[in-house]
Length: 131
Image 1 (cartoon, one colour):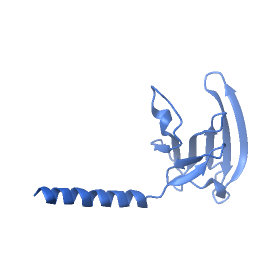
Image 2 (cartoon, rainbow, N blue to C red):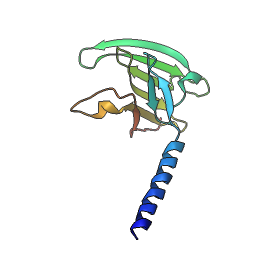
Image 3 (cartoon, rainbow, N blue to C red):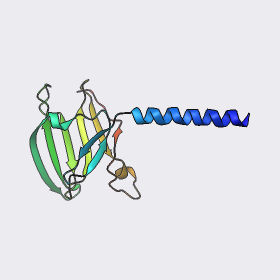
Image 4 (cartoon, rainbow, N blue to C red):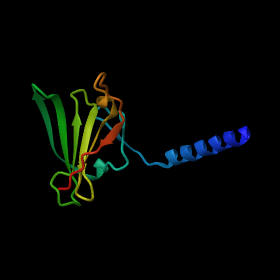
């Protein structure tokens, strides 16, 4: 019986591992040419044109760089936006998906209110609103 349980756990772990390995992740670079992992649903910014880059300094919000992108294959003027800190770390991306819903992904390290950090792995937040 014990051997059967061990075999079941082993087979289940192998299936889960294989499934996780098959999942598609996007890898992009921040402004410092470091790799950043983004959700698979994040569009490929290399297929878009930069519309505008805006550096801002706001007393309450801090400072950063916004980069606006346009995908010429859509009706939207701006399809994808990236937010960087001044050091070049990618903090947030937002885009309009194929259904017209706004999607947002944020660096998972920033979600820790006690010790925010930059992990280089963006996770999707549930904010989708149809436009």
